[in-house]
Length: 165
Image (tube, rainbow, N blue to C red; front, side, top):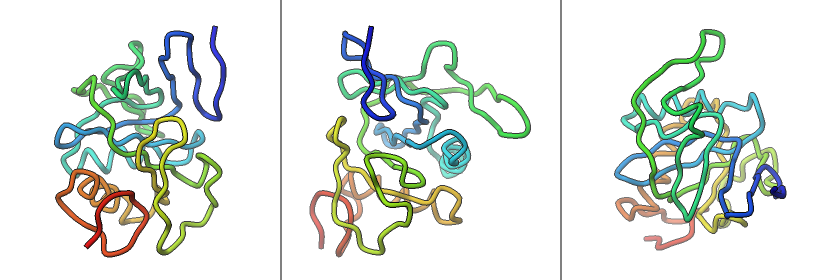
């Protein structure tokens, strides 16, 4: 038995089942959330190409801040128009960042702001930003955002909670 919070399904034990994808770098996970077909798997592939590791695609299970795949989908990633690819995956991983795609999470506007105010995901309590998934720079901007969360880069002004320079 569970209840729904937007795109999140929650069971009575506190396990969240999200329609999303997840990648990890430097031991910290990036959760990609959005509606079906909005580009989660595509952005995930580009993050993997940049050195991230697969955690989960299509469904992400989150418990106590740790993310992993739904058991039936572990190690699978969708290559739209081609099929499902089996590859190594890492799980569980602690989450550090939520990326909302196409403005479909938490009421974000469909057009990204140039200099957004910092946002925190209302359920997960993690820094959250919006990225257009098919932009050529989407994977690099996601990587920079994770670096900011990890403290290895700092924004002069911008949409992530934390220190700026």
